[in-house]
Image 1: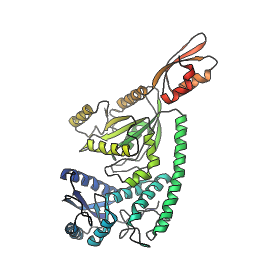
Image 2: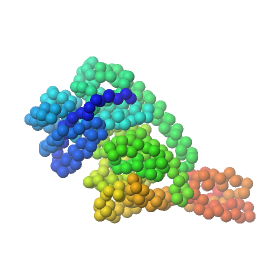
Image 3: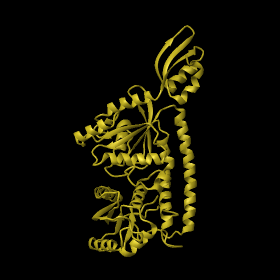
Image 4: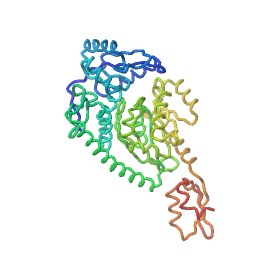
Length: 421
């Protein structure tokens, strides 16, 4: 996906609206995150505006008077773009741009833009482009009109080829159809890869968490994966899978996934469905939480909301509180006490990693059944299969058979049913 080159960082005005039940404090915290998102997208915050309203204005979301005030503020700071923390309807976007005289986008468009910058694999690029096209289709201004708001910049990254600014609705729909077909093929390939991993009988662990919680740093610490790590939101959006040997001898597959965030665009969740299936099919989720965050519980709630949306809320979860090296010790202690079975660590320094590995091994062993198998000596192939499929706890030899005690996952046990003592 070819990206638009920028010779300078854009200047933006950020706008938040506290509408009950959202409190002013919550709206301010969300605006702080919006500022971090804008920085990641390549923009500098010039001004921040917070408004209280009982309900959104149907025409402009903030009301005509507030929109005119935003225009004056934007003129004063010479802002390129005004970014709203809440999703705008197509009509609200158009009305605001008329009043503001400049591009007006929402948090959804901003997040899509960041994903467009950070997706590198063919699947990631196709998924992001599809999400952007679905978002923009209802925002076309009429037959033959451009897709962008008023100029290139944040929220206008569509990639090259078929998705130029002059593309019309019909051509856009053809592009959507083509991307959907490509993603169907990519989904088949992913399913084939998952089946191959399933045949390997290796347990799968997926790392999930709020963006910038330290998931990629943890994967690198565990497996030397070499994944890009930056102190920015959504630094990585393409999943990475690596093999890991646990202290008890178990071998597992660990996958790092895209970070979640409050108000994660529905278009992204749908477009990344094939990628997020990795989460739903995992044996265990490592839910990484930034213990130094201002409101870790809100981050956990946001992650669990996405897990519910993708059907992964019933996958066994283990909470991993990260950034112990910078978190307040008392706050970290309270988090551990309120979440039994959780682990506190620092993926950056390595503190607590050994404890994590031990607990992961224990959790996986708890999820398997210890069975006694009696295998005749002429069935050495079965003994070998048991070793591959599970963890052999002990082994002895009778006059006529090998006796094994092994931890075997329920889905594998059927293969050895005739040998169960």
